[in-house]
Length: 126
Image 1: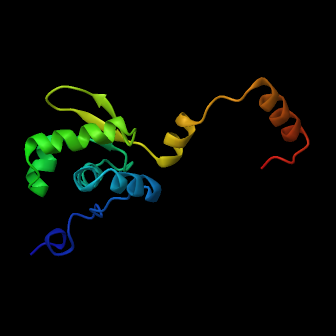
Image 2 (image 1 turned 135 degrees about the vertical axis):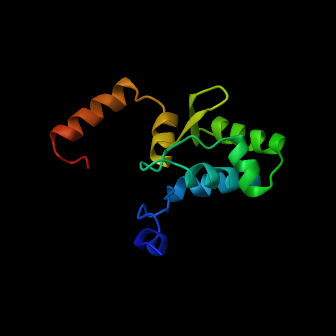
Image 3 (image 1 turned 90 degrees about the horizontal axis):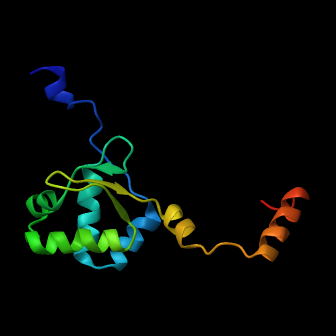
């Protein structure tokens, strides 16, 4: 037995998900939450970009193809994932919760922007 066989490939074979994004995925239902984990499990080193798709969700969870497609669509509609490449080999990006919140935050009014500028200059804004 070689060292690699004994100790694995050395790649770590783990993944990480943003806690708030995971909570948001769980709030969407069981199938979207499970699909989120599958997408994360097969993500690249950045723990965001993934080529896993409907087939991976179906194969590794037993969720039927149609329901797996729906689960991924729910994630996309909730902005927890972005479609980077469409087609027979799609590529997705898992979105950090902070990015979702930032995207949903309305623009500052002129008065709010002026106040923000003043506070920044006074070093009172963290």
